Length: 210
Image (cartoon, rainbow, N blue to C red):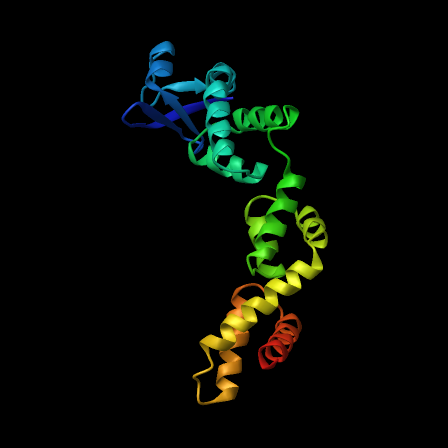
């Protein structure tokens, strides 16, 4: 496909070639020197450019992805977002994700299970955990399956522990109704539903009275 160079935005060690179609190509200085010179108004075959750039981008993108995974476990969608921000081509990103999955360096199902269990223990409710997983690129179905595997007893204990902490925080409120509204609102921000919060508060009050 033929397209025309609209802008060339130079950076410290690279440049972004912006086409009339809006498509962008990020090249390092080394890649720019290897390729025929770009100029505003130059007609470029973008299919050929993508094909030429792919094997040159892939090792860099794979290295960036491995560095991200070395920091902590991540979902594929999260890695995709990070690589997109660095302006890697979609073909490059797909190759990287395929390699990570093939080498078992990345497993979305395991990531979702671990994230859901960890966040539930950290006094975070179901709706917020679900939202966090979706933001990390986990599918709705996979996120819900991960939440279904969370240990209910641990999750309930975490909710009660949060309720106790909030009860102490709002114990000085003169108006009990307002105190309860604030408590429920605080638990809602943590992702707990009304019924779940109400039950946790009731158990917390009983235990604190004992």
